[in-house]
Image (cartoon, one colour):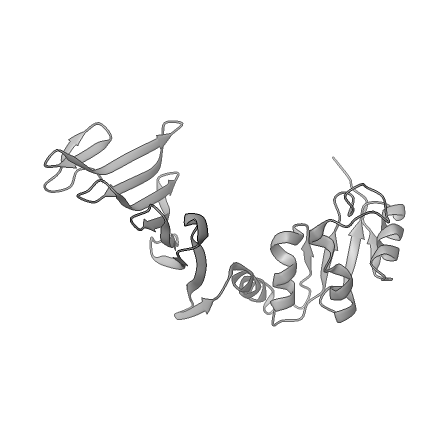
Length: 217
């Protein structure tokens, strides 16, 4: 990648007229990312690698703020593109996601819509599909947005309140559970013990609170 026409290579940097234009960055002796710099020294593009394969690319504006991020498939073709606009305190705001899938291009306003699409595709044609969430912050809203109806459950790995008491303050990620259960957007709760299942049933006003003991081998 450094050995390009018109560039002089010195170590991990390729230069043009004495100015760095491509810089290779390593981590643990492996290729991590490659910066492509313009004539003024700004990094306009950064390619990230995993085990030698390019996985995604970030494009920057003049404040080094991300304006787009592209993810590649196994053949190196662009699969997903994230688009950003300027936000407060120089923090980019995600405004559009484009997905190329099955010869079509889909648009999503946020990652939850993209996750819902992924889950819909995952369960398509599977009459026995069941979805279990153990990351409420990244998946519960996607359950709401799904177009296909499959059994969905929330599993508790630890206490659902900040102080560990059944009547304590709920963690923010669990606040939607009661409404989702009532609306049929969630089919039940899963706990590790009978006591925890009883506490969850009472706190979230549901009879669909089940026990799956934690086991180890």
